[in-house]
Image (cartoon, rainbow, N blue to C red; front, side, top):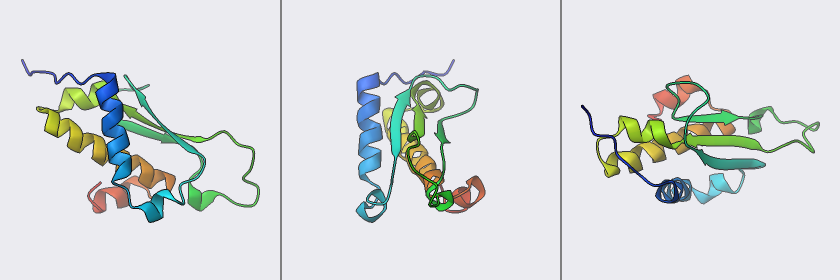
Length: 116
């Protein structure tokens, strides 16, 4: 039986914050109306993260007084697919960058081409 890596919620939140810190400042400055949260379990199987909202590329003059976009990073599935804490660190960063990419309007196919 595979060993499940245990990472506390507090530590996992720190890893997400550290992953966000690796995004270039030029990009984080233009991120707008988005909140990043850690959630233990996804709403459906096989998700490590989920972006919900209106990407920056689709916002127009009509965009105001809307709830923030959400990026959810799922702690338990990430810990379940990793063999070591270092793997968790790497997977958190990949997942955070991937979901932030969606905020910028980049689709899954292009993100995978870019290695995210």
